[in-house]
Length: 150
Figure 1 (cartoon, rainbow, N blue to C red):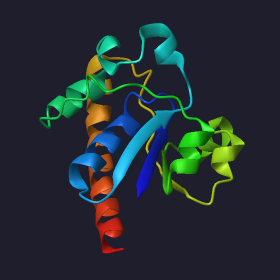
Figure 2: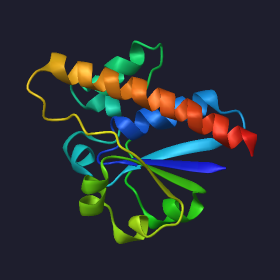
Figure 3: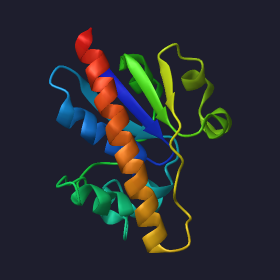
């Protein structure tokens, strides 16, 4: 089974979910993508090119290196190839930002994980990313268990 994790920028939430999923699942595979190319335009396609990106730091605390992961932009081919699409953002944000071809998919599932960019200090962003990382890890473990039963 091919799982697609989607968030706004593909530098935090969806990258964390993809990495955990591929670590925990033996039978299925995940990719991730974002809907906004801001970071690619500003820094390039590697997460490591983004200065002080908290997702890299919080995953390193778990012994996982995501710094070389590539930032990917969502496209229709990804939607077609995926068996399940997991959106890691609030439904309100998703309804506003996601393309209709995603929102209309029957393969769609939501995980209400808020974007934490824009916080005032690096420490508050780090703590929020740790909280998101731990929540995503738990949700991914549940999903892997669910899919392994099939």
